[in-house]
Image 1 (cartoon, protein in one colour):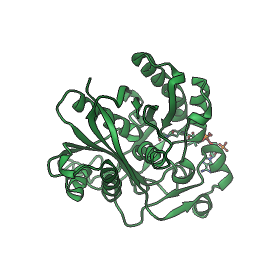
Image 2 (cartoon, protein in one colour; image 1 turned 90 degrees about the horizontal axis):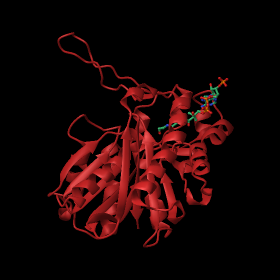
Image 3 (cartoon, rainbow, N blue to C red; image 1 turned 30 degrees about the vertical axis):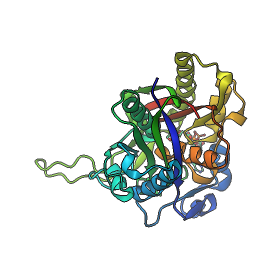
Image 4 (cartoon, rainbow, N blue to C red; image 1 turned 135 degrees about the vertical axis):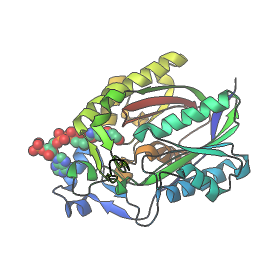
Length: 321
Ligand code: UT7
Protein backbone atom coordinates (compact mmCIF):
# COMPACT_ATOMS: atom_id res chain seq x y z
CA UNK A 1 0.00 0.00 0.00
CA UNK A 2 1.26 3.49 -0.83
CA UNK A 3 1.46 5.96 2.02
CA UNK A 4 3.58 9.05 2.79
CA UNK A 5 6.83 9.02 4.70
CA UNK A 6 8.55 12.00 6.30
CA UNK A 7 11.94 12.21 4.57
CA UNK A 8 13.09 15.59 5.88
CA UNK A 9 12.32 17.99 8.72
CA UNK A 10 13.29 21.60 9.31
CA UNK A 11 12.49 24.46 11.66
CA UNK A 12 13.27 28.10 12.22
CA UNK A 13 12.61 30.54 15.06
CA UNK A 14 13.30 34.29 15.17
CA UNK A 15 16.36 35.39 17.11
CA UNK A 16 14.71 37.67 19.69
CA UNK A 17 14.09 35.93 23.04
CA UNK A 18 11.42 37.38 25.35
CA UNK A 19 11.51 35.95 28.88
CA UNK A 20 8.74 35.80 31.46
CA UNK A 21 10.55 38.55 33.38
CA UNK A 22 10.47 40.74 30.26
CA UNK A 23 6.68 40.30 30.12
CA UNK A 24 6.35 41.12 33.82
CA UNK A 25 7.55 44.61 32.88
CA UNK A 26 4.56 45.22 30.58
CA UNK A 27 1.65 43.33 32.23
CA UNK A 28 0.73 42.34 35.80
CA UNK A 29 2.31 38.88 35.80
CA UNK A 30 5.37 37.06 37.06
CA UNK A 31 7.74 34.27 36.06
CA UNK A 32 6.45 31.91 38.75
CA UNK A 33 2.80 32.16 37.62
CA UNK A 34 3.66 31.59 33.96
CA UNK A 35 6.05 28.71 34.66
CA UNK A 36 3.84 26.81 37.07
CA UNK A 37 0.59 27.30 35.12
CA UNK A 38 2.00 26.65 31.64
CA UNK A 39 5.59 25.33 31.67
CA UNK A 40 6.73 28.31 29.55
CA UNK A 41 9.93 30.22 30.45
CA UNK A 42 10.56 32.19 27.28
CA UNK A 43 9.37 32.60 23.71
CA UNK A 44 10.80 33.87 20.41
CA UNK A 45 9.25 36.98 18.92
CA UNK A 46 9.71 38.14 15.32
CA UNK A 47 10.89 41.72 15.02
CA UNK A 48 11.24 42.11 11.27
CA UNK A 49 10.32 38.73 9.78
CA UNK A 50 6.85 37.68 8.66
CA UNK A 51 5.06 34.31 8.73
CA UNK A 52 6.25 33.47 5.20
CA UNK A 53 9.88 34.36 6.03
CA UNK A 54 9.86 31.89 8.93
CA UNK A 55 8.04 29.30 6.81
CA UNK A 56 10.49 29.56 3.91
CA UNK A 57 13.52 29.15 6.21
CA UNK A 58 12.03 26.05 7.89
CA UNK A 59 11.08 24.69 4.44
CA UNK A 60 14.60 25.19 3.05
CA UNK A 61 16.02 23.15 5.92
CA UNK A 62 13.50 20.34 5.45
CA UNK A 63 14.17 20.20 1.69
CA UNK A 64 17.92 20.15 2.29
CA UNK A 65 17.61 17.28 4.76
CA UNK A 66 15.29 15.36 2.42
CA UNK A 67 17.95 15.65 -0.29
CA UNK A 68 15.39 16.41 -2.99
CA UNK A 69 15.28 19.09 -5.66
CA UNK A 70 12.59 21.76 -5.05
CA UNK A 71 11.26 21.01 -8.56
CA UNK A 72 10.20 17.56 -7.32
CA UNK A 73 7.65 19.02 -4.88
CA UNK A 74 4.07 18.59 -6.17
CA UNK A 75 2.20 20.21 -3.29
CA UNK A 76 2.88 22.85 -0.61
CA UNK A 77 0.42 23.31 2.26
CA UNK A 78 1.11 26.02 4.83
CA UNK A 79 -0.83 25.68 8.08
CA UNK A 80 -1.14 29.12 9.65
CA UNK A 81 -3.54 31.45 11.44
CA UNK A 82 -1.26 34.45 11.07
CA UNK A 83 -0.86 34.94 7.32
CA UNK A 84 1.05 38.02 6.21
CA UNK A 85 -1.62 38.74 3.56
CA UNK A 86 -5.16 37.60 2.81
CA UNK A 87 -3.66 36.78 -0.58
CA UNK A 88 -1.32 35.71 -2.05
CA UNK A 89 -1.20 32.70 0.26
CA UNK A 90 1.85 32.14 2.40
CA UNK A 91 2.28 28.77 0.67
CA UNK A 92 2.68 30.55 -2.70
CA UNK A 93 5.29 32.83 -1.14
CA UNK A 94 7.17 29.80 0.18
CA UNK A 95 7.01 28.26 -3.30
CA UNK A 96 8.59 31.38 -4.79
CA UNK A 97 11.37 31.43 -2.18
CA UNK A 98 12.34 27.74 -2.40
CA UNK A 99 11.93 27.41 -6.17
CA UNK A 100 9.31 24.63 -6.07
CA UNK A 101 8.11 25.64 -9.53
CA UNK A 102 5.95 22.56 -10.10
CA UNK A 103 4.01 22.69 -6.84
CA UNK A 104 0.38 23.61 -6.25
CA UNK A 105 0.21 25.75 -3.11
CA UNK A 106 -2.36 26.87 -0.59
CA UNK A 107 -2.78 27.75 3.09
CA UNK A 108 -4.83 25.77 5.56
CA UNK A 109 -6.57 27.39 8.54
CA UNK A 110 -7.18 25.17 11.56
CA UNK A 111 -5.40 27.14 14.32
CA UNK A 112 -3.23 24.91 16.53
CA UNK A 113 -4.47 21.76 14.75
CA UNK A 114 -3.38 23.19 11.39
CA UNK A 115 -0.20 21.17 10.92
CA UNK A 116 -1.91 17.84 11.68
CA UNK A 117 -4.78 18.66 9.29
CA UNK A 118 -2.28 19.77 6.60
CA UNK A 119 -0.18 16.63 6.95
CA UNK A 120 -3.29 14.46 6.74
CA UNK A 121 -4.42 16.35 3.64
CA UNK A 122 -1.06 15.72 1.98
CA UNK A 123 -1.36 12.06 2.96
CA UNK A 124 -4.79 11.82 1.31
CA UNK A 125 -3.36 13.21 -1.96
CA UNK A 126 -0.31 10.93 -1.85
CA UNK A 127 -2.20 7.78 -0.85
CA UNK A 128 -4.68 8.29 -3.68
CA UNK A 129 -1.84 8.69 -6.19
CA UNK A 130 -2.61 12.32 -7.08
CA UNK A 131 0.79 13.59 -5.87
CA UNK A 132 4.09 11.97 -4.87
CA UNK A 133 5.97 14.64 -2.92
CA UNK A 134 4.63 17.32 -0.58
CA UNK A 135 6.04 20.05 1.63
CA UNK A 136 3.93 20.63 4.74
CA UNK A 137 4.73 23.70 6.83
CA UNK A 138 3.37 25.18 10.07
CA UNK A 139 4.37 28.81 10.59
CA UNK A 140 3.08 31.52 12.90
CA UNK A 141 3.82 35.09 13.88
CA UNK A 142 1.09 35.17 16.50
CA UNK A 143 2.77 38.12 18.20
CA UNK A 144 1.01 40.38 15.68
CA UNK A 145 -2.44 39.07 16.68
CA UNK A 146 -1.95 39.35 20.41
CA UNK A 147 -3.16 42.13 22.69
CA UNK A 148 0.04 42.84 24.60
CA UNK A 149 -2.07 44.38 27.39
CA UNK A 150 -4.01 41.13 27.97
CA UNK A 151 -2.06 39.01 30.44
CA UNK A 152 -4.42 36.05 29.99
CA UNK A 153 -3.14 35.51 26.42
CA UNK A 154 0.08 37.46 25.83
CA UNK A 155 2.20 35.28 28.13
CA UNK A 156 1.27 32.09 26.28
CA UNK A 157 2.26 32.47 22.66
CA UNK A 158 5.43 32.65 20.56
CA UNK A 159 6.57 32.82 16.93
CA UNK A 160 8.21 30.03 14.93
CA UNK A 161 7.98 27.59 12.04
CA UNK A 162 8.46 23.90 11.31
CA UNK A 163 8.29 21.91 8.08
CA UNK A 164 8.37 18.36 6.76
CA UNK A 165 8.86 16.86 3.30
CA UNK A 166 6.71 13.78 2.72
CA UNK A 167 7.06 11.33 -0.18
CA UNK A 168 5.14 8.34 -1.45
CA UNK A 169 6.58 5.19 0.13
CA UNK A 170 5.56 1.79 1.48
CA UNK A 171 5.66 2.84 5.12
CA UNK A 172 5.14 6.13 6.94
CA UNK A 173 1.72 7.47 7.89
CA UNK A 174 -0.34 4.52 9.17
CA UNK A 175 -3.58 6.38 9.81
CA UNK A 176 -5.23 9.60 10.97
CA UNK A 177 -8.31 10.92 12.71
CA UNK A 178 -9.74 14.46 12.54
CA UNK A 179 -12.66 16.34 14.14
CA UNK A 180 -14.19 19.82 14.23
CA UNK A 181 -16.90 21.45 16.36
CA UNK A 182 -18.02 24.77 14.93
CA UNK A 183 -20.53 25.38 17.73
CA UNK A 184 -17.65 26.15 20.13
CA UNK A 185 -15.78 28.60 17.92
CA UNK A 186 -16.26 31.45 20.38
CA UNK A 187 -13.86 30.06 23.01
CA UNK A 188 -10.80 30.90 20.91
CA UNK A 189 -11.07 33.62 18.27
CA UNK A 190 -9.22 36.33 16.41
CA UNK A 191 -11.38 38.66 14.34
CA UNK A 192 -8.61 40.51 12.52
CA UNK A 193 -9.79 42.09 9.25
CA UNK A 194 -13.44 41.19 9.91
CA UNK A 195 -16.73 43.04 9.42
CA UNK A 196 -15.70 45.50 6.70
CA UNK A 197 -18.53 46.20 4.28
CA UNK A 198 -18.60 48.62 1.34
CA UNK A 199 -22.41 48.93 1.15
CA UNK A 200 -22.74 49.58 4.90
CA UNK A 201 -19.79 51.99 4.75
CA UNK A 202 -17.97 50.06 7.49
CA UNK A 203 -14.23 49.73 7.77
CA UNK A 204 -12.64 46.37 8.62
CA UNK A 205 -12.06 45.94 12.32
CA UNK A 206 -8.73 44.77 13.60
CA UNK A 207 -9.39 42.78 16.73
CA UNK A 208 -6.99 40.76 18.83
CA UNK A 209 -6.98 37.14 19.84
CA UNK A 210 -9.33 36.24 22.70
CA UNK A 211 -9.49 32.96 24.57
CA UNK A 212 -11.54 31.34 27.30
CA UNK A 213 -8.51 29.50 28.69
CA UNK A 214 -10.39 27.21 31.05
CA UNK A 215 -12.83 26.07 28.35
CA UNK A 216 -9.96 25.34 25.96
CA UNK A 217 -8.12 23.48 28.71
CA UNK A 218 -11.15 21.28 29.47
CA UNK A 219 -11.72 20.62 25.76
CA UNK A 220 -8.08 19.63 25.22
CA UNK A 221 -7.74 17.21 28.13
CA UNK A 222 -10.96 15.43 27.08
CA UNK A 223 -10.63 15.38 23.30
CA UNK A 224 -6.92 14.64 22.87
CA UNK A 225 -6.90 11.29 24.73
CA UNK A 226 -10.18 10.46 22.98
CA UNK A 227 -8.87 11.08 19.44
CA UNK A 228 -5.62 9.22 20.19
CA UNK A 229 -7.60 6.22 21.47
CA UNK A 230 -9.83 6.31 18.36
CA UNK A 231 -6.76 6.30 16.11
CA UNK A 232 -5.11 3.43 17.98
CA UNK A 233 -8.28 1.40 17.73
CA UNK A 234 -8.82 2.21 14.05
CA UNK A 235 -5.26 1.14 13.15
CA UNK A 236 -5.21 -1.85 15.52
CA UNK A 237 -2.17 -0.45 17.34
CA UNK A 238 -1.58 -1.33 21.02
CA UNK A 239 -0.72 1.85 22.96
CA UNK A 240 2.49 0.19 24.29
CA UNK A 241 3.88 0.24 20.73
CA UNK A 242 3.93 4.04 20.63
CA UNK A 243 7.44 5.41 21.17
CA UNK A 244 6.47 9.10 21.37
CA UNK A 245 3.34 11.23 21.64
CA UNK A 246 4.21 14.55 20.01
CA UNK A 247 1.43 16.86 21.16
CA UNK A 248 0.70 20.50 20.35
CA UNK A 249 2.75 22.53 22.83
CA UNK A 250 0.13 24.71 24.54
CA UNK A 251 0.56 23.95 28.21
CA UNK A 252 2.65 21.40 30.11
CA UNK A 253 -0.30 20.67 32.42
CA UNK A 254 -2.42 19.67 29.41
CA UNK A 255 0.28 17.19 28.37
CA UNK A 256 0.49 15.79 31.92
CA UNK A 257 -3.26 15.34 32.04
CA UNK A 258 -3.37 13.62 28.61
CA UNK A 259 -0.53 11.27 29.66
CA UNK A 260 -2.37 10.41 32.87
CA UNK A 261 -5.66 9.73 31.10
CA UNK A 262 -3.89 7.48 28.58
CA UNK A 263 -1.93 5.84 31.43
CA UNK A 264 1.37 6.48 29.66
CA UNK A 265 4.59 7.76 31.30
CA UNK A 266 5.68 11.36 30.72
CA UNK A 267 8.98 10.13 29.19
CA UNK A 268 6.98 9.39 26.04
CA UNK A 269 5.70 12.99 25.85
CA UNK A 270 8.51 15.25 24.65
CA UNK A 271 8.04 18.99 25.29
CA UNK A 272 9.75 22.23 24.31
CA UNK A 273 7.17 24.92 25.12
CA UNK A 274 9.60 25.97 27.87
CA UNK A 275 11.71 27.68 25.18
CA UNK A 276 9.16 28.65 22.51
CA UNK A 277 5.77 29.07 24.22
CA UNK A 278 2.70 28.06 22.24
CA UNK A 279 3.57 28.47 18.54
CA UNK A 280 0.15 27.21 17.40
CA UNK A 281 0.36 25.53 13.96
CA UNK A 282 4.17 25.46 14.17
CA UNK A 283 4.57 23.67 17.49
CA UNK A 284 4.39 20.03 16.32
CA UNK A 285 6.81 20.25 13.35
CA UNK A 286 9.15 22.42 15.45
CA UNK A 287 9.33 19.76 18.14
CA UNK A 288 9.54 16.92 15.61
CA UNK A 289 12.50 18.59 13.89
CA UNK A 290 14.25 19.14 17.21
CA UNK A 291 13.84 15.44 18.08
CA UNK A 292 14.90 14.32 14.61
CA UNK A 293 18.06 16.43 14.61
CA UNK A 294 18.89 15.23 18.14
CA UNK A 295 18.84 11.64 16.81
CA UNK A 296 15.86 10.63 18.96
CA UNK A 297 13.84 9.09 16.12
CA UNK A 298 14.79 5.65 14.82
CA UNK A 299 13.49 3.78 11.78
CA UNK A 300 10.40 1.78 12.76
CA UNK A 301 9.49 4.00 15.75
CA UNK A 302 5.75 4.56 15.98
CA UNK A 303 4.88 8.17 16.79
CA UNK A 304 1.56 9.87 17.36
CA UNK A 305 1.17 13.55 16.49
CA UNK A 306 -1.85 15.30 18.00
CA UNK A 307 -3.08 18.87 17.65
CA UNK A 308 -6.00 20.75 19.20
CA UNK A 309 -7.24 24.32 19.11
CA UNK A 310 -9.48 26.98 17.59
CA UNK A 311 -12.45 26.00 15.51
CA UNK A 312 -12.71 23.98 17.64
CA UNK A 313 -10.53 21.45 15.85
CA UNK A 314 -8.57 18.39 16.96
CA UNK A 315 -6.87 15.45 15.35
CA UNK A 316 -4.08 12.90 15.39
CA UNK A 317 -1.74 11.11 13.00
CA UNK A 318 0.06 7.80 13.50
CA UNK A 319 3.48 7.62 11.86
CA UNK A 320 6.02 4.85 11.49
CA UNK A 321 9.41 6.57 11.24
O1 UT7 B 1 -3.18 26.51 21.55
C1 UT7 B 1 -4.54 26.79 21.69
C2 UT7 B 1 -5.04 26.15 22.84
N1 UT7 B 1 -4.89 26.96 24.01
C3 UT7 B 1 -4.70 26.34 25.16
O2 UT7 B 1 -4.54 25.15 25.17
C4 UT7 B 1 -4.80 27.11 26.43
C5 UT7 B 1 -5.55 26.30 27.43
N2 UT7 B 1 -5.72 26.97 28.72
C6 UT7 B 1 -4.69 27.12 29.57
O3 UT7 B 1 -3.58 26.71 29.27
C7 UT7 B 1 -4.96 27.74 30.92
O4 UT7 B 1 -6.33 27.88 31.09
C8 UT7 B 1 -4.27 29.12 31.10
C9 UT7 B 1 -2.77 28.93 31.21
C10 UT7 B 1 -4.59 30.02 29.93
C11 UT7 B 1 -4.75 29.79 32.37
O5 UT7 B 1 -4.48 28.93 33.48
P1 UT7 B 1 -5.60 28.68 34.58
O6 UT7 B 1 -5.00 27.81 35.60
O7 UT7 B 1 -6.82 28.19 33.85
O8 UT7 B 1 -5.80 30.12 35.17
P2 UT7 B 1 -7.16 30.96 35.28
O9 UT7 B 1 -7.56 31.50 33.97
O10 UT7 B 1 -8.15 30.18 36.06
O11 UT7 B 1 -6.69 32.16 36.18
C12 UT7 B 1 -6.29 31.98 37.54
C13 UT7 B 1 -5.89 33.31 38.11
C14 UT7 B 1 -6.91 34.41 37.89
O12 UT7 B 1 -6.90 35.24 39.03
P3 UT7 B 1 -8.03 35.09 40.18
O13 UT7 B 1 -9.33 35.33 39.48
O14 UT7 B 1 -7.88 33.68 40.69
O15 UT7 B 1 -7.65 36.13 41.17
C15 UT7 B 1 -6.36 35.17 36.72
O16 UT7 B 1 -6.78 36.52 36.70
O17 UT7 B 1 -4.68 33.76 37.49
C16 UT7 B 1 -4.88 35.09 36.98
N3 UT7 B 1 -4.06 35.25 35.80
C17 UT7 B 1 -2.76 35.62 35.84
N4 UT7 B 1 -1.95 35.93 36.86
C18 UT7 B 1 -0.68 36.24 36.57
C19 UT7 B 1 -4.41 35.03 34.50
N5 UT7 B 1 -3.37 35.27 33.70
C20 UT7 B 1 -2.33 35.63 34.51
C21 UT7 B 1 -0.99 35.99 34.26
N6 UT7 B 1 -0.21 36.28 35.31
N7 UT7 B 1 -0.47 35.99 33.02
